[in-house]
Length: 192
Image (tube, rainbow, N blue to C red):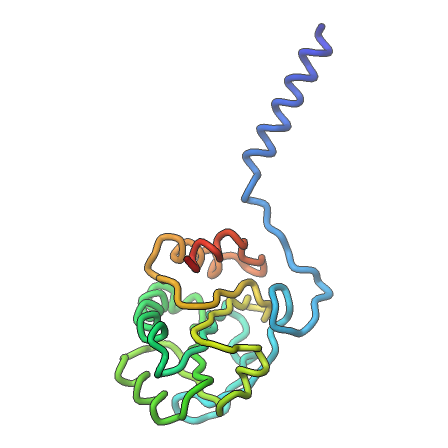
C-alpha cells in the first residue's frame, strides 16, 4: 500500500514539475549552424548604404540584438508599421539595433519617406533586388530578429501591430533572450 501511495506522489510531483517548466525551457540553436536565412542559421552578411551613404555591413551591428526590417516607400503596410517600429525603438534604443533596409525602391523616394517620417532608427539602402534576392524577400514588409552573435532567432512576414501586447512581449523576449530562438507561438501571435 505504501509503495502505491509513494508512486502516486512521485507521478503527481513529476507532472507538477513538468507543468511548471512548460514554456520556460529555452531551446538553443545548434553550435554547428550554417550561414543562411532561416531560423538558427547565422544571418547572411550584406552591405548597404547608411543615411550618410557610407557602406555598412550587417556584421557591423554585432554585440546587440538586431531588429532587421525590409520595407519600401510605396508599401502601405510599411507606412503603417514604421511609426510603430519607432515606438519600439525608442523603448529599447540602448539595448538593440533597429535596421530599416529599403530594398525595392529608388533611393530618392526611400530617403524622402524616411526623412519625412522622422524615424531615428538606422536607415539602410541597397540597389534593387540584391539583398531581396539574398534573403529571398518577395514582398515587404518583413522582419527578422537576429541575436547579438548574428543568429537568426525568428522571422515575421507582413506588418504586425508592434504596439500589441503580443508583439511587445515578443520584442522584450528578443531583446533580453540572448541566442535562444523565439518561440513559434510568440511569433505567430505577434504576426496576427
